[in-house]
Length: 165
Ligand code: ADP
Ligand code: MG
Image (cartoon, rainbow, N blue to C red):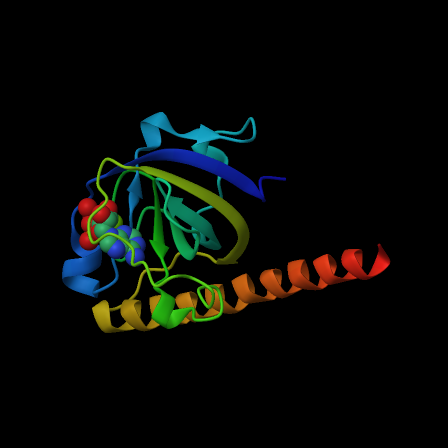
């Protein structure tokens, strides 16, 4: 069982397509220096789109939609791990109590912590960027929903524990 798994790495440069062609940046992790919470290798990760939570350096925690694999619409030859950290405007519930700090625009070379929590779908080659963008927007919405459900569970558990004291 690979999930849930935590990892830490450095944010490196990819092809720059996420923000330029898709309008959706993904922080590419340095897969040579991945630190994993379990004794598995990157090869063992099923390719696909995952959801999880992520943070850059000591910033706050974001829900993330994460691509693991070869970006078949583009056909890369190396396997990458790329979280898109979901902005507060798309995830108001997670950030409801935040002080309004915004994620840096550029965090190359910074440390990224990422927990993969669930698997959402296999990676697919899309016919054209519009279809790809549509799919990623769907992935982001689903990740937000799953992230909020987990938060609800945690809150409920906390209340339950408190009422028991
Ligand atoms: P690259 O191919 O170099 O990864 P991208 O176009 O995918 O380029 O953009 C990713 C970069 O954008 C990240 O490394 C980071 O510096 C920046 N970035 C800004 N906002 C975000 C975000 N919400 N999620 C992921 N990366 C972001
Ligand atoms: Mg990227």
